Image (tube, rainbow, N blue to C red; front, side, top):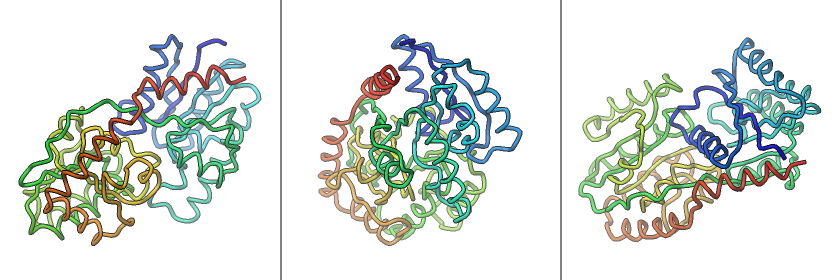
Length: 347
């Protein structure tokens, strides 16, 4: 079996998001194992690219020689169904699905239906599907009719983090996530307003560029809350580990997560977590290490945050459980080994 593969991805591979971090780790890991990896940037705007961008992406992929193996990031692959149907008999296509496109926050019913239909058609043409969580594997099997034997789960790896002390007064609450609707920073900000009588500071790390409208809305909300001196919008940070090490509590009110790498990173630093019971979050965050609430439940999120801010004993108990859970998470070598082994054994 030739260790040669094309890796196709949309947008900017350097973006500081969990999905792109995963892609970078896989590319580097395969190369370190002797694979010849050809990177194929497919352009911006996916999963809603312009007609021109989509045509150029399809043309680039169609230039691959007969029999070539190509791994396509699901953010693009889910809308390349026409290309996949046309080329699946000639190319060995593997899809990398972080989470189904139709589950993104903010879509109307028609958009959800269209994305689900196109992704279902595209995945049916793939030789195999790699997913980043057991939750996504279950979703593809139950809602997309993908046979379980066609799916490989390779959850993101983690690097051990410097243990957070967790004894801050005021408590330092850290949230990490791109400023897009799905990450729920509006819920977090509203919840923090509800507990402004307690002693805390907060830092929100995440790019403002992927959804400028959402970023502006958060900035306005923060200004109107009167908490601008206590909540820092730090923007994109090259290395989030020092930020996590400085925290006492990690909080992110995501409305959906296909895995949630940042939750695993928080566990590796021994941080108690406040999050929403959605997607793969309950699979990543053990009950003893955090408090999970309903989606968009500002009161419950505020109550959970407030309990960890005010009760040092509870905070330390959750932190210790987080450290234990973080120690059990796989490293990136294990993640890439799973993917490399599967790619090698495909017919």
